[in-house]
Structures are given as structure tokens and as C-alpha cells.
Amino acid sequence: MKFIFVTGGVVSSLGKGLTAAALGTLLENRGLKVAMQKFDPYLNVDPGTMSPYQHGEVYVLDDGAETDLDLGHYERFTNTKLSRLNNLTSGQVYQTVLNNEREGIYLGKTVQVIPHVTDEIKRRIWLVADQTKADVLITEIGGTTGDIEGLPFLEAIREFALEAGIGNTCFIHVTYVPFIKAAGELKTKPTQQSVAKLREIGISPHLIAARCEKPLDKELRQKISMFCSVAQEAVIEVKDVDHSIYELPLMLQRERADELVCRVLHLETPAPKMAHWQEIIRKLIAPQHRVRIGVVGKYIGLQDAYKSVYEAIMHGGIANDCGVELVQVDAEEIEKKDGEKILQGLGGICVPGGFGERGIEGKIKAAKFARENKVPYLGLCLGMQIATIEFARNVMKLEKAHSTEFDENTPHPVIALLDAQRKVTKKGGTMRLGAQPCQLTVGSKASQLYGSFVIHERHRHRFEFNNAYRERFEKAGFTFSGMSPDGKLVEVIELKDHPFYIASQFHPEFLSKPHQPHPLFKGFIAAAHHHIHHKPI
Image 1: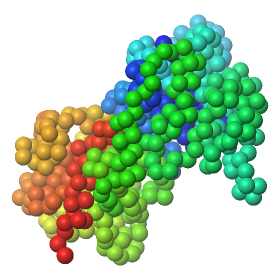
Image 2: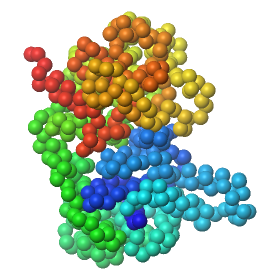
Image 3: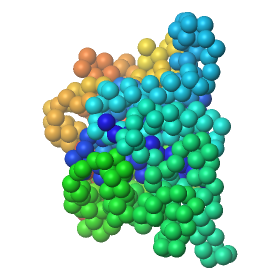
Image 4: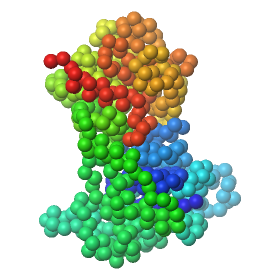
């Protein structure tokens, strides 16, 4: 088995995860089985309790693991199957080591970073390698080279390379080559310093992926090559993409990154066939149709907060050969200003998941606007609860109907806490999480879109539709088109007298890929395009 380690230097947010995922795409298209893994040096056990402003969205896997958003890139770009083993944090490492110490596993020895912490990190690499039986395992090390919390991970992969043997390990260092506007030139010094820091730790990169705004000329590549002790052809230009992150595999292919990696790892494979990927890019750059989609949320200022939602909407556009202009709508702005004016002219409205009371009334106004004006609406998790509250208040006339998450004393708790959640005191990993089965109603819009009556979707929530109100909702024209197999939990709702008004308690965005768009997003974009181009004058 071969191992690739992706590290980063100079600054964070360089796109290590995207680089790793794009490389995974190329290697898969060379016929290799690829597995992927992310190491995060922070002390949280997982990102589940973090604010999106701290760490972007929390990405949920089939087994219920709350993980880093980079695992979303891995799943969207490749066919790798991920589990909680594929995301390791310092918190998990130290928790395991300290539990081992308490249980006497270390036989009275002094517990130290080397070897006990580094051994635990290496154990996780071997564990994923053993379980996946992949040809290549790509492991991304989060953070920036030189960060104090990241040092045990870098030491561990240095040791691991020795254990794996010569020719079985490849180090890729993603770095930054800034363009200094006043001087009118790119500067390589940050890259030189970053690689020097990495070499101090004992790791010499085989490839340098240089993130840059402007193209690298031959002279700059020679300079980086000389000062960083890598072959000139192994200095890979990773320029800002023009249209979409899905251009990255083709960019890396042009730079022969996959070919170089295969050479380092002594892998003989045919060149990747990327025609299907080129067609995806064609539909993104030169689509036959166009539509504007409003995403109404409270973390709009942060691009990564709704990462999977934005990507899944784009995938829906790819499926319809339709370019999507994402309009980020701050829910609080709808509360303060003329909501109808803000939402006017949109082909569709999407209300994603979230927690907390801020912006709730703005989201309810958005759902009301979509329902009354026949604008296609897609609600995700909280978006389903919002649709329920709006319908209860404005159609069923249940005054002050709400969720007990936001108003414990509401006279009509149409959304309430799950029974299993009432005694929960810990925050981390305690919600309804992971893939759960759902049965769709025959003849429903949802079942038509899925082409199936039994589906499995990923969840992340504590509150549910209150079944005490189910009969009243049905009489008012509210359709429950998806239920848990035991019939106790509402999973999908829709309105019959509306061209497209569907909301799910689960998160369909986590299962969407550019080459396999999710059925709900595919149907949503199709309805949004139809709404804009066929609505009555």
C-alpha cells in the first residue's frame, strides 16, 4: 500500500483539502482504489460543538461522526467511503492515550508525546489502511507547519515514512506564493521558510503545490526548486480557479501532479480518463440555462458555513445544464427590511440547517413568501421546521406556533424535543446523527424525484415534528411524504398545491456529488428554472 501526506505552510485556508481531494480524483481515474483521512491538531474531540464562525460547517458521515468540512470534499471528489476513523483530532488522540494510561496499558511507563502520542497517530493510519484495503491512502494534516499543536502529527508521519519503507510514501507540501501588488511580482520567500521549517522537523517534500493568484514562470519554479530541494517539475502551480473548485483535478493533471506522485510511489498506471469531468466543467462554465437561487441563513457572512449546501445546489445545476447564481440572503435582513423586495426575482429559495434563535423570523418570512408566491422551496433540517411553523401560523391560524427550541412556552409546540434528547446534558455527539432509513409515500413528489420508496439519509438534529399536531396538519393540506420506518418520525414534508415545496428533516446535501447530483437538488433547480422562465406575465 502507498501513502501520501499533504501538509500546509505559510497560512491556513490554502486549500489542502481540495488539493488532496482533487489528487484523489486523478488517482481513482487511473484505476486505483483511494482512501482519504484528515488529521486536525485542535484539542476538540470533534468539530460538533464548534461555531461555524470557528471552523465552517460540520460534515456528518453515515456512521454519525461529526467531522471536518474537508471530508465533504473527499466524498464529493472521490468514491471513498468515510467513517469516524477517517477524521482524527488531537482531542481524540490525547483522550485515547490518557484512557490507556488509566487502564495500565503502558505498564507504568512515563507517558510522553514520543512515543505514546505519535504511536497512537500512526496506529490510526495503519487502522484505516487495514480496513479500506486501498491502493493509496491520502492523509491531510490540518493547520500550518510550525503550529505547536501540529508538531506531534508531523513527527508521527516522519516516523511512519520510515516504517512504511522507501518508495511507499510521498509528501506534498501546499504553500503560498503571494503577489505583492506594490512590487508587481510573486514572492517565494514564504515558501522557502515554510519548507525549511518542515525540513527542520525531518520531512522533505517530494512535491510543492504552490498556491498563487498569478502564474508561476520558469524562473520562479527554478528558485523554489533550488531553495527547497525539489525537482523543478515537482513545483506544481495551483492558481486560483476561474469558475469552480471542480476545475482543480484538471489543473493538477495539466501540471502532471498525478504522474509525479505515481513516479515517487513506483505506481504504474494508465493516464486518467477525465472526459466526464471535463463535461462537468463545461456545464459550469458554459451552461445552456441560468437561474438565481436564494440561500436564506444566519451565517451568510462565512462562505464555509453552508459549504455542502452551496455545492449541492451547484450539482443540481450541473444535472440540469443550468448555471446557478447563488444569492446569499441574511435572514436578519429580511426581519429588518422589506423581505419581499429582497426575495423578489429568485428562481428558488433554500433554507438550510442551523441552531439558535437569531434570524428565525426572517426564515419564516422567506418560507411564507415561497409558499404564497409559488416560488420553489427546499428546506433542509431547520428549513423543514421553519416550513412547519410558518404553515401552522399563517394557514392553520395557530397563533404563536413555534419550536420549543426557540420558545419553551409556545401555546402550539409544533416542533418539539425528541424524547430521547430530554435527558441529554452533554453537547458533543449527542444529537440524532448519521444515516437513517426513510419510507416515502407512493405518488409523492419526493418518491418521484428519488425513484424509490426507501431511502437512507444523514441526520443532525435534536428537535422533531410534534405528532400531536399531525392530523390537523394533514387536514389543512400539509403532506407528510417521508416517515421513519416505524411511522413515528416525520422526515419529509411537501405541499400538493405548489410546483415545488419540499423540506426534509435530514441533510441531503451531504450525499450530493458533481457527477451524482442529489435527487432533491436536481428537482429543485429544475423547478426553479421552470418557475423563472414559465411563470405567467
